Image (tube, rainbow, N blue to C red; front, top):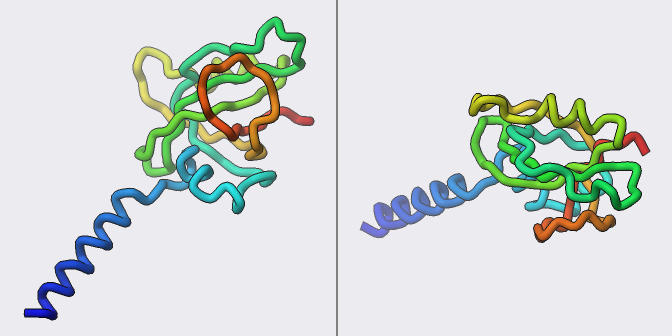
Amino acid sequence: MKAVCLAFLLLNVSLSVHAVAQTKGSFNYLTASTDKFLGKKVTVFISNVTLPERNAGLGHNFKVYLVDTCGSDGNDFAYGLVKVSMEDAAGFVKRYSNKGGKFTARSAVGVFKERDFDDNYQVSVPYYLDMTKE
């Protein structure tokens, strides 16, 4: 009976761990292990640009967007901030915006950084993906 109870307990623990595990490619995955990813080039899967830039007119040479990300398996949705250069902003929005409700996640590569800019967002996201070429 003890063996059956132990087996049942181990099965429940393993299922619970699997259910909360982050999927590679989402902001959840990156923020779960910031020490592993900070300052490194990473790939995230962006499924939509949810809000327009908020720092327009602040005199910056970049724009910041709030985006929806998902894991490589299409699950584990999480939002995050992405910083792009002014010259790449229009192309970024065109490439990553969800058109007509069609879900298409596209990979984006940048450096995962701690938030170090004023962007007027009321979102408490301490990290971002830097896609500028600085």
